[in-house]
Each structure stands twice: as structure tokens, then as C-alpha cells.
Length: 621
Image 1 (cartoon, one colour):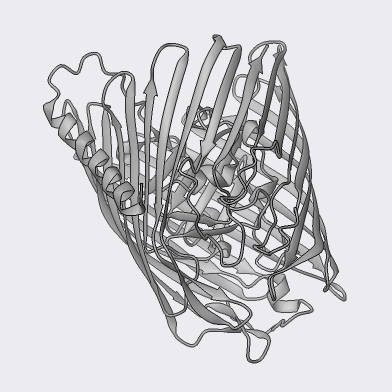
Image 2 (cartoon, rainbow, N blue to C red; image 1 turned 30 degrees about the vertical axis):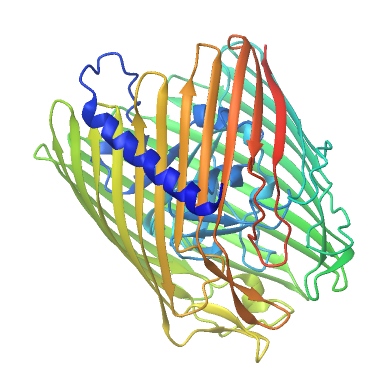
């Protein structure tokens, strides 16, 4: 089946689901979609009152993707592309949201921002995440600097780890084994192994959680070379969390994490096999406390993280960095008014010839008004006080209007927001191309759209976005230094999402993204992207899902010639099946990717996975 036929099938699938909704009469037996509560205001608020575009990946969806990495799951969502997620396990990941670059996306774990100040782009390495330890993921698309600070220009990925069990002791063990092979080498040998153990519980007012995870894969070369030498990848992580409930209104948790990563790779200049390795270690200590006081809450989140990495290659190097983040905020709800006031402190530090650091202190305020007439207004501002750049005000104006009836609602939404993106420590003070005279980037985002929600059985939305970037920081290959671009970079696009329960057992989720970026090359950004997932609960114990992804044409750079290359579009089909042998205790699952064994290129010169199959089980005691 060629790609054109696959594209037509996906379009027909969406069209058929739309026709089916019009034909249904008796809807009393259909399982409803839970009303999504989003935290784009940092206060629980009904989705119908939110004017932002938020994607919620629930624990149920994570369970139906057992065996996959966090990056593989996130990249199926609208407006986001994670390059490297379809390649060799452990390949470097590039997170692109709404036509932006990775440094314009921030990641939070349990309310605390995580980033590696010793890396070139100061991004967080998603390869360190353990999917089995995650309760849910929320992705807030668009500029969110008023709530989350500098660099939150295109998206915020909020990760919530699994909560304490209410039982005295509960154990969960998940393991999977699978293939890791290219299209041309379908040997079906076992090359991918994942294990995860979590023990947690609650003893009166005391709660605890201990987790362990490891992953190992080999069998595939990082680069496409005649030798096809295997480049293994492995991670290991340990998590410890304890909590104490002093009263019904006051709780506190302390946690620690250690994660280690080792990835072999090849020489990208000349596309040669090479015995190179990258080693990375992360250690994080943090705390979270929450006090409820009638109509409000007071929350304090804090964490200190250290990063150490070593690059073993023709250009070896050791990198060390650390950061401290403290975020305190208070929420207050009165009738239809939600108020949030907070202050955030962060300090990033890394070692070059000497230690370099910068710090940011940000007071911020957000107010949300939900009128009985259906008008919702979200206003916010944040004053970034940077040790290198002084003060910068960012703000957000986000009106929406909801028209409700007995069956659901129809919502119009719009946003005008600004963001502030600071250069990284490496760009300012590093040993390769540093420029201490760099200016921070600024970002303006406009978006507008609508959402349609019917009887808790269907949700459809469409959003248009337009971004303008100024003073974009880039690496100048002619001078071998970082600099600010003279012109502006414009990105615009359209996102469509469909979430539909066709019956109690059958559900379809589909999304389409159109993205256009001008002003620079904008590599690895597909102009057209489509994802469709069809889920069927065959019985109380047996579930099956079928997924389809289409990635359109995009540009990449040949770094040997520095010429632009257009990469061909490709389509992938996968499936997931699970069977409960013991309800709520023992489940076996199968996850298959690229069922048609299509040969495709995700990143120029790098290996991609052919047909791959993973099987495993999930045991809860």
C-alpha cells in the first residue's frame, strides 16, 4: 500500500466518523468523555472556561502506549514534532512546537522547571524520562511566559509523576522486550529491553514511593553506513518520594532522582562509523508543599539539580552544570474570578574555563474571569528580572466566549501574548563561538480558534496561530560565533483536533497540523502532519488500537556541504493490543510500529526503525 493510498484512507476514516455522528439517534448507551480539567491558569478550571489550547495525555492513554517512550507519545499530538523519536532508540531528540526550536519549549516535572544549563541549547533531555513512572502529561501550546517564565514561547510540557497509593503497600512491575531493527534488516532479534518497578503506599499521614527503571537497546547503527555497526543505548534511573499530611489542608512532599544515560553514536561529518559515546548523569532533589485556606491555596515548589556529561569522540569534552528553581504562588477564587500571584527564582550555573551563571527573579500575576454570559477573560503579566539583561515585561491577553446548551458548548477563543527567550550560558560564555554581547530573543504570538463539544461524546477544535520572532540567536558558520539575526522569523499554522466516541467501545482521535516558517531554513519542520488513532474495546479484558501517522515534506541540512535538502514525506502504521489476564492485576500487551516496514528518512543520514514489535506485561499487586 503506497503513501497516497494511506493518506486517502486516513481522510476517509475522519470523514466516516463525521458521517457516523450525524447518523446516530440513540446516544444513551455511549460512554462519555470525561470533562477535561486543565491547569493553564495553575488553578483547576473547566475546559469550557479556558481560552488556551491544552492537550491532556491521561494515565489511560499512557497505559495504552506501554512500551513507548514519552517522546514517541508526545510527537503524535498536534502542533508538536520531535525529530529523532522514530529513529534508533536513544537518538538525540529535537522538540519543535508551532514552528519553533527546542529552546522555546520548557519542561516541568511535578511543577518545577527542568533544564540542563551545561548543554548548548539548555534543553531538558527527554531520553531521561521513564514513561511507566508518569501519571499524566499536559501540553500547553502557545506563548506561556506569563505563567512559566523565560523560553516558554511555543509550548509547555507539564509532567506529573505517579501519585501515592491509598493502600499501605502497592507494587507495580512492568517489563517489555522487543526488536530494534531497520527496514532492510528484519532479523526479529531481541534488541530492546525495558524494566520498571514502583512500590508505594500510605500509612496514616505518611506516604512513600520508590521507583526503579532501566532500558537497553542495540542492534541498530546511529548513522546509515556500509558497516552498520551497532550503537547501543541505555538508561537507568532511581526515584524516591516521601510525603506527610499534617492536616487535611496542609501537605508536603520531598523527592529525589538519579538518572544515568549512555548512548553510542557515529561521526556525522562524512557519515562514518565511529566508537563515540555520550554519557550523562542527572541528580535532582526537590520538595513540594500545598496549603489550602478556604477559597485559596498557597503552593511552594523547589528543586536543585546537577548535570554531568562527557562526550567521548574526536572532540572530547566534559560538561557540568546545575540549577536551582523556587516557585511560590497563591491562588484565590471568588465567585467567577480566579486570581494567581506568584514569584519565581531560578539560577543556572555551568563550568567553562571558570564558572559562569545567571539568575532570574520573576514576580507574576494572572486573573481569569468567567462571566455567566459565557465571556471568559484571562489576563496575565510577568516581570523578568535577569542578572545579565535587566527587566523585561511579558504579558498575555486571552479572551474566549462559550455558548452552552443542554448538549454541550461552542467556544470561540483568541490570544495575544509575548515571550522572552534568553541566550544560554554556552552561547554567552562557552568555549565554542560564545558571544557575551548577544541580545535576548522576543516572541509575539497571536492565535484564534473555536472548539465544539457535544454531549460529552465529541470534541473538535481548530486553532490558527501566528508567531513573530525577533533577534533570533543562531550560529554563524562564516564567523563561527553565535549572533542575533537581523530580520524577523515568522511562523504560522493551523491545528485541527478530533476526539470522538462513536460508541461505548469505539473511539477515534485524530489531528492535523499545517506549519509554515519563513525567515530561515527551519529544518525538520513538516508543513503537513496527520495523526489518527482508532481504539476498540473488544471486551472487558481485550483492547486493540490502530494508529496512522503522515509526515509531509520538510527541509534538512547536509552538514558536509551545508546545502538544504528536501526530505520525502512518509506514512507509518502501528498497533497496540492488551489483554487483562487478571483484572486490575496482570495485563499483557503488544506494541508494533511501522507495520508496513516503510523505508523513510527522519533526519538526514540517520537510521530509522523498520517494522518493530514489542511485547510485555504489567503486574500490580
